[in-house]
Amino acid sequence: MKLTYFGHCAFRWQTAGGVTVVADPYRNQAGRYWFTRLFPELRCDLGLITHAHFDHDAVDRLPEAASILRTPGDFSTRDLQIRGVQDLHSGASRLRDFPNVMFRLESGGLRFLHIGDNRVEWPEDVSTAIGDIDVLMVTVDDSNHLLTYDQVDSLVQRLKPRVVVPMHYAIPGLHSTECELLPPEGWLSRQPKVRRLATDQVEFTPSQLPTQPEVWLLQPASASLTAPTIIP
Image (cartoon, rainbow, N blue to C red; front, side):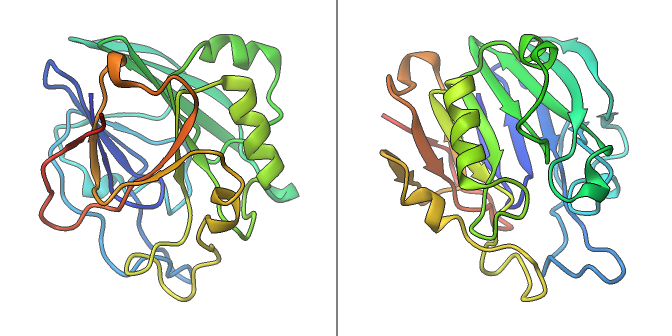
């Protein structure tokens, strides 16, 4: 599985069989100028939208032929299985009844979970639907915009991923000064093993996953994508 990070909560997966999936492309909206550039136009077969907020749902930037998944349920194509698990958005009281769909992607013996902006205190049936995972994409920044450090840590302890990929934090050159977010440095300083990768792409294989949980911080993709990095 090749994973590319485009900043904020936007990722692209490419399976060995050639299926490409993009999650949570971002945009600005009136009165919310968070991003200094448009989300890049990408080729993909599927688009995943965790919830209908401006920084997660720039569907117009995805190819017209791409299928868009927004709802819970199971979906499979070629060598990829996707499960959408619905729960609720994290954060302020006005969002506590706002639906959010977490997406679990599985291919080639690897299992990824993108939580969108989900809360941490989800019920047992949600945990059962998610099951075991290897790579977790989790929202974390030093403003605690969505989750506190302790909430993120508790989620990692509960899911026991081999790799944690932070998302939804301020990135110089991508986020504007009007953005409410901060970098994730405070949370990173609490983690026992952090890899700061000088690349936007990583190639995952089951045999190369770390034996103990690690945090991998990716650089957001530029206009011209670099070759994937294979982590030894």
